[in-house]
Image (tube, rainbow, N blue to C red; front, side, top):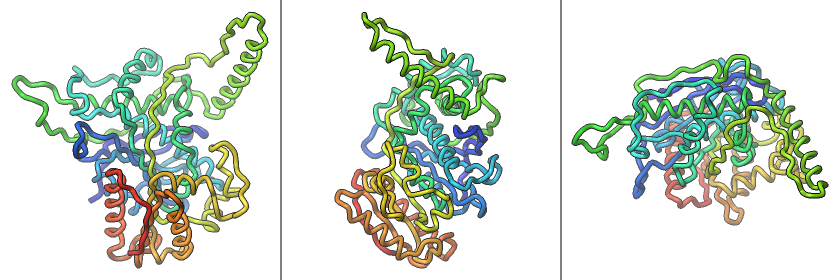
Length: 426
């Protein structure tokens, strides 16, 4: 059975403001893990295959994977890359705009999940009415409560970054979540980053108000079972900012660069001032919300991953290190089939790669060699499953169930804290 999203909405890409269609799914119940007093924040993003070949968030493999992850108590988010289905724009030749699309949704999603408060997490809070979705002009008064909301939880969320086919390629090239969140820690009025944070804040606040039980005389909330799924799906479009205040993403980045240069000049003047007088660096007007979330514990799920040379045709990346500047500069890459920073990430963080031995985009022999090399590294947390008779589209009899089983067992293993590096063929 295909799960139903609790919300369908749009956010702007911070690359160029292209509107992206998004969905959020909630587990049926936010059940605390065994031995814990509250729900452990768990969120997963699943990205779809190549849009020109029909890929979108409605892809059967994407839906199957998200359905299984949902059963494990995760909030799940999906979105359409530019040019996919009804998302605006068109698929790029380089995949760099698509990488920004994923960064945009990731920024939204982490803020949204951190803002959720299932009833047993905040059972002392009983809002008297549904929150009013206010314009950006009132954000200054709202942000203190937003800060308190995020800081109520002392445990960083678990973030599962998943992708199928082309989606796994974009996911593989993501910067660290710390780098992603830095784009949203301090934002400015009218920017796409502000739009994204406002939407995350308003949507999580609205859901909190809808599911929070109201106290009844003589009745304890301890045994109250509240469904995590809203009785009606929310559809949101448009923008959160006041009319006339929105700024183009590229203009915003140019402005930020001007600010950085101004701050550098100010620091230079301060250092040369005889008496050390402070000179306040100029900032963009109407800045709001300096927010620093705890960096999520990130794990990765790669379904039918693409390897060179297919991945190069799909993205036209200039070289394997083309996106490595996120991590502080591109290293000297001599092997055109190896991206060392991506591979280090997969060894360091728990990662599951699932592929079929009938995959025709990348041969199972090449995939197996790649996976075994990552698995064999010292202290590696990379694991893989090679599914017998499964093709790239997972349409063969019984292979979808096998894929779901692999995801389920891996997630349980990782959440239990006993993730080990291993791999096998099934």
